View 1: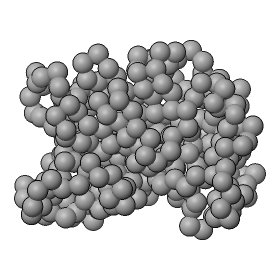
View 2 (view 1 turned 60 degrees about the horizontal axis):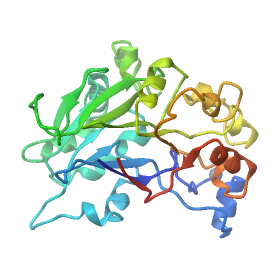
View 3 (view 1 turned 90 degrees about the vertical axis):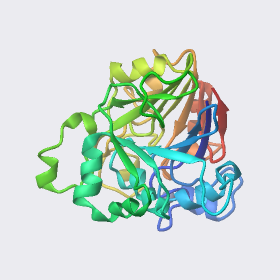
View 4 (view 1 turned 135 degrees about the vertical axis):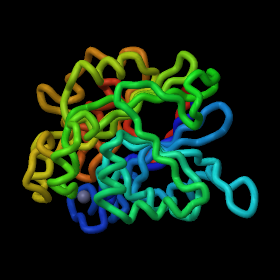
Length: 310
Ligand SMILES: [Zn+2]
């Protein structure tokens, strides 16, 4: 598999349009220890050159344009993008679907609750039905393997197999109370496990809690792209830009005694990369002690354009 990070920041990006926190201000001032980042987006390709997007970020149009391998291959209309896999109904994970509205047939893979939120509560996503054939929504049962881009479960080794791993967490606050009452908790936030041959990738840009279940997926994977949103539990509060601690927004922070860096019992085998980094996170300052601490602990820090052969 080839895995390319098209965007590595959390919602808002880096810098965020209305944010004057120290990181965003110093980046705007041109300080060289900072690198701009667009909102989290990953694309994966199988051996046969078809591409699948992991989530659909608010920056999706410019991210596709920044990746020449995603150019149309022939007139009049074409894309090597075969589909999109969704991990949640968060605005930052789904709004980019609207960027894909140019009458392009696509496969969308998501837990049934995510489809219901997008199509029943938010009719704008029905714009994808205008394609001929219309976008195909594939209801995915969590913890169940399925082949990407084919309906044949016994398809060849070259097909990427995929699994949505429930991570706990909550549905976004924009979901109506009536609909929320009918949705099972297991669909709310998932990670994506991708396997091809003996190789495995685990993508979890939002990790609401530490659990043995996701640590097992991480342990078995050659590449882990994991939640690097916040450095500390009270980061937004101390920066004066929010009133809630990280855990209440659905992210395990990196530091703290029970944070992500303290989870040393997984991913000894594979590369560990932090993605979905919020613009307030001090690891974005390449000269900071926090940046050094993350690197010394064996983690890599995602940037736009980073890519991996797995
Ligand atoms: Zn900022």
